Image (cartoon, rainbow, N blue to C red; front, side):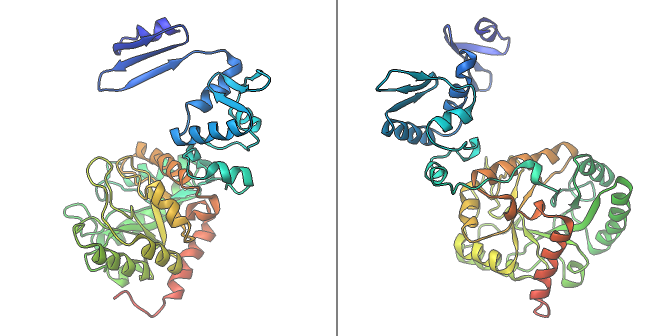
Length: 372
């Protein structure tokens, strides 16, 4: 196996080659390491190389306090010299007196203490999701047709989803109110054709002053409103905080899309008072999105965990612009799991009736107050 690995045609350079391990360098700067050990230590090996450095340091410190030494080769009893090998990661954690900790939660941020005390939550899983609220079609800037996107959502086994094409503020890409209403008629018919409840939605631009790109008469016709910032991102922290607070107070806003506006490779995200906005989202019944687009992953897991402390409701979405982008929701789930988000804290794990009740409750609470 080692020989075949180092002779791989994509290997630009062999960095190391031995009996049990080897490393190669691929074009583009990716290093791949291979370890080959007996099957009875597979659990030790997998645990050792999964999760963060901080998690493993803390795990080793815990083991030392118990008179043990943890490595990829087993768990050594320092007094007896006996080495315990584990075929599964569960066995590794059990040998240290801990329940299994999923890989996404191995960050060294208190998970060992929580696991030891029995307070580590069970994170949301991909199988818990019943739908996806954020996806686009060729009606705005997507590349999949309306029917293709709806059929693909149905094929994933969703009970519901929403098409959230852009509002008309998106130059050359969005829907004016007339086109949005025309789309609504097609959405319902195509959803019935493919056996899925397709909710009428839109991703509506948040203007610099916190008002939305559609007026109230249009917003109230939608089942779901995803409100997102796409421009005027260089305003002050205070102005951005006020902008997002106004959105949370809007009775028709269901979800704040990609809440920091970040692009992983080019923009760290606009600044606002996180705690004030998170508290407002929880108070008003406004969900915060964890966007699964690989260039966004927004909210980031650290901020999502912070938002969780305010009892925020999250929405885990793909922000798909093509059929194959629907799988982006897996990255949203990964971010949520890193943040310790549970199934009960996610809007799109609820049955359809629960989703509609969430929307109706907010609208009823703010009835008559207007959107400004």
